[in-house]
Amino acid sequence: MELHILFKVFMSIGVVGFLGVFLRLYHALVVKPNRLRSLLKKQGINGPPQKFLLGNILEIKRPRAEAVTKAATNGPPAFHNCGADGMYNLIQESAATLLDTWESIIENQGGIAEIKIDEHMRSFAGDVVSRACFGSNFSRNKEIFSRLRALEEVASKAVLSANIPGMGLLPTKSNRARWALEKEVRALILKVVKERNEVGCENDLLQTLLDGAKNANLGQDSIRQFAVDNCKNIYQAGGATAALATWCLMLLASNQEWQDRVRAEALQVCNGLIPNVDMVLKMKQLAMVIHETLRLYPPAVVIGREALEDMKFGVITVPKGVNVWTSVTRLHTDPKIWGPDAYKFNPERFANGVTGACKQPHLYMPFGIGPRVCLGQHLAQAELKVLISLIVAKFSFSLSPKYVHKPSFTMVLEPGNGVDLLVKKL
Ligand code: HEM
Image 1 (cartoon, rainbow, N blue to C red):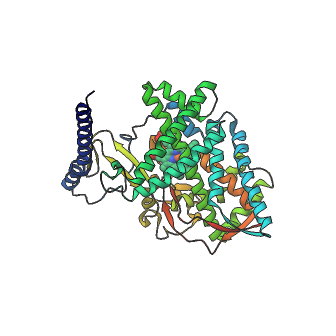
Image 2: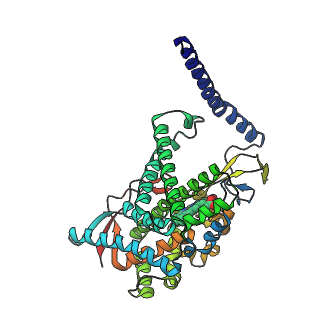
Image 3: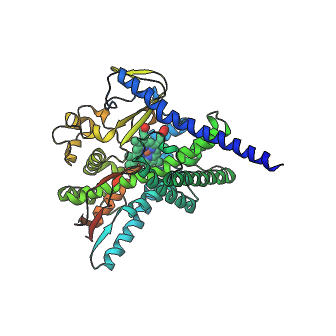
């Protein structure tokens, strides 16, 4: 082909590409914000609505298989074919690794050790979620966790610029890093899926998800997207459980009275045995502490829904296609709902469950609400109960003077500077 023709072809591709990028930016920067602003102005709204019960019409577009919904309501055993006792054994095995590590650190440091607990909690929660939900292929799971963690860090920085429309589309350094990581995570997850399809059936959550996608009458691309989205969700959920465990230990470290109460209960109920389902159900003080931790430091700070049709919330009209976000932290710390001590750590408020603790129990939503409520809520709470009861039975701990209170939002609400504890063996 002649040189000048080649030149013309390249020029036309360039012009079309440039026009495409320009139109996308114009829509994101000018058309969309103006349309939303005028809609909200018409309704006299200055900020997003904060308090309402999320209805069924506001939905997440991602499909959820029926079998997966069953897993959400049935509790931990539905994740794997090992039964309730097997699931508790699995959690206990992961916790044992953490306890052994702490014991040897304490021994090496002469009886009392300063431990930054965040990474330990992440390994524990990651270990449980991989084994409970994805069965085999542990090393690949580890790789996915580490890439997702990197993705969370990049994405959390992008949150700062998320309010500038169109920023997510520009090939900035952080956007390029995010796109590359997203591509990598997607490829890794699809590899896990492919390997599973080749190996055949197992009886775990991954299998439930894949069967659910196949039975949902979706096209090939949607099946792959369904698998990637749901697997990503579950891997990231390990991070939420780790954050919850970290906050819970921070609160027990700074509230010695509650640490003593939880320890006395764990020693009395478990009597040196590995906690099982019945024992965990008996630990009421621990349940109260976990509820209070989830109230003050809910790892998922917002719940989002998309309006699938125009709808009304009281005086507010939500047009089809608009995403609505509810601030969980705001609902959980509103003195009108929780009383004047709303910001105080007071697990006693949950002595009679959630209904006894607040005037409108549906506004307590650490695991979300409605048909898309968290799939792993029972697993996460079981994990935490087993881990904390084993820790308090073996160690006493207080906050290190190094600790700086800095709740930060990455993909979940985490202690921004980590949590350093002074730990000694009992
Ligand atoms: C402390 C730990 C956890 C917290 C605070 C948490 C919180 C949440 C929240 C707020 C949602 C959104 C619910 C809604 O939109 O109404 C959610 C969804 C979800 N969670 Fe969790 N989660 C945790 C642990 C887990 C674990 C361990 C798993 C894995 C087994 C898991 C799996 C999921 C899945 C698959 C969804 C999506 C459900 C759907 O879209 O249908 N979560 N979680």
